[in-house]
Amino acid sequence: MSKRTRRNHASGFKAKVALAAIKGDKTLAEIAQQFDVHPNQVTEWKRQLLERAADVFDGGVAARSANEPGLTTLHAKIGRLTLENDFLESALTKAGLLSAKK
Image 1 (tube, helix red, strand yellow):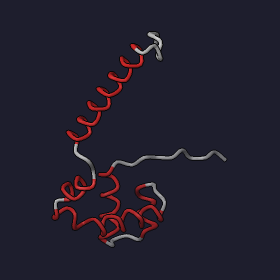
Image 2: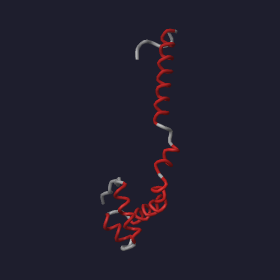
Image 3: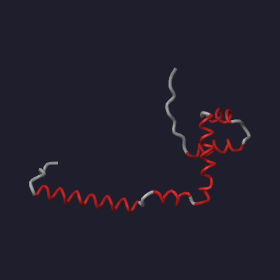
Image 4: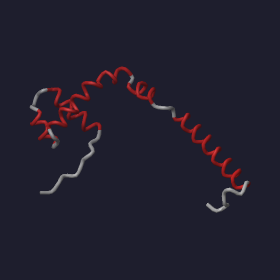
């Protein structure tokens, strides 16, 4: 008995399966067999689609980006940390506490 490797499905495929489940033309077992996924997975994708359907019309990207720091903020932080590291490295080298070898 060989174990099946974990599969990663594209978001388009998940949407197609979830929409088929919402239509109600076929049973969950038939949909799962048609798309070669487990029936529990079909139910989960259907639930996720129903929960997040309003985000399509709410501007889901704006809501998601509000929780994430901006790219410019992260670049600024990287620049600041790089500058601090370079300063400390040169100061420690001059003080003889850090060898010149890397």
